[in-house]
Structure formats: C-alpha cells, structure tokens
Amino acid sequence: MTSARRYSASPIKETPMEKNLVIVTGGARGIGRAIAEKLVQEGYAVAITYTSSSTRADEVVSRLQGEGGRIRAFQADVTNPAQIAKLFDDAISALGPLHGLVNNAGITGTQAPIADQTPEDLNKLIATNITGSLIAAGEAARRLSTEAGALGGVIINISSVAARLGGLSGLVAYATTKGAIETFTKGFANEVARNGIRVNAVAPGLTDTEMVPAEAAQAAEKYVPMGRMGEPSEIAEAVAFLLSDKASYITGTTLTVSGGR
Image (cartoon, rainbow, N blue to C red; front, side, top):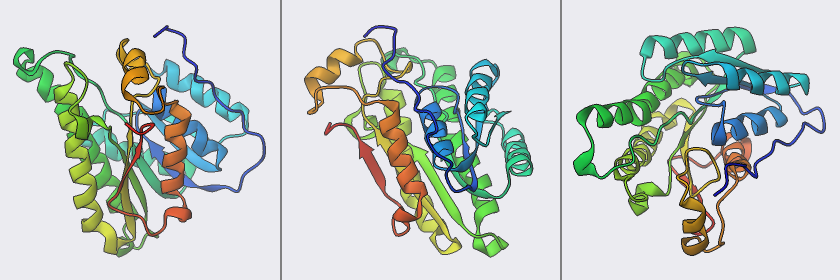
C-alpha cells in the first residue's frame, strides 16, 4: 500500500437544512474526518476532537467552514471524564443543542502477540477504546435523555469486523476492545431506549486509512469478497444513515460495512 491515499473530500454542493449538533471524537483524520465532512454536508453542526496537537483538526475546520459548514474543534482526551464533560459544555455552547455522539476516537495499540504486550500497552488500549467510549456515551446520554427534559438523540460507536474475526496478526488486543464495544452497544441501547436514545455501532472492514497496517491492501485483495479496501467516505455514509430519522426504529444493532468480509 502506498503512502498516498485515494480518499478525498467532497465539497459541499448545496445549502442543506440546518440540523443539531453531533460530536465526533477523533474527527481530525481517517474515518473520523470523513464522518465529520459527511455530517457537515448533511447540515449538522459538528464538533470534532483532538487529543494534543490541533494541526489536523484546524485544517479540517478551516476548510469546511470555508465551504459554509458549522464545525469547531475542541481538545479532549476521551479517557479524562472532566475533559469530556467540558467538551460537551463547550460544544453545545458554541454550536447549539445536541443531537448525537459518534464514538470514533481509538487506537490500534502495539502490534504484537499478546505474549509480548505489556500491562501498560494493554491498559492504554483499553482506556482509549473501551473506557473512553463509555465515558463519552454516558455524558451524551445524560444530556439527551427525555427523562432530563431533552428530546432524545443518537449514539453511534465505531467498532470493527475484527470484533468477530479476531483481528490481523498482532492486533488481537485491538480486536478484543472492539468486541467489548459491540457488547456495550447492545446493552446500552437496551438501557436507554425508553429515554429516547438510540445506540448503534458501525463495524468497518479493512479501510484505507493511516491506522491500517501496510499489508492490509494485499489482504483485502485476497480476503475481501469485493476485492478491495473500503473508503472512509463509505463508512461515513453508514454513520449518517444511523444518525438520521430514516433509522428511527433501529437500535442495539451493529451495521457491518466491510465489502462482504
């Protein structure tokens, strides 16, 4: 796989109807960036997060604002509850009422056999991919619940087909965290369904992003029935559907976007 990416952003072609805020964690690159771009095109106000360096997030925001989009970037470490609470406060203050959350922030962790992983490696992976998603989802649910006087909303967790396939070589720990995300999606959906909140997951297959190991392109040709990796924009389309009223009776479900893998 070459370093050049086939992915390119689609410009906003028309003025869509304005929709409420969606927070996309880790929205500065890869699938998260594609989701942010698609949602801005759909008319949503969008808040994206970055952990430390704002350079990429600022680039995304500057371009989309220049095309008429309502988008802002905020610093937030998903493993830090205080920072996540501040993120929601600041994003709502800047961009208006909350409609949903896309739990996209995640890491692959150290690519190595389980026997070679250190407790520090595993704890960082679990804290980011599992604990961070639960913290953000809880914060969103408190603010979306009809029991609290809100109008309800949508939470979408980004999983992976690795949750069911076990992951590529050296990424078993990563796959394990995504298995937890799919369990959480089902359980949390049941928990908050009567509060006007839908919770679903999107499980990408091999997708052409920086997180995917170099051997993924060759693996896709061999193991993906469609014979190729997915594009980030194809994952974003699934997320936009689940956020919309077209998915109003869908909750507790994982939508697989994997070319048949």
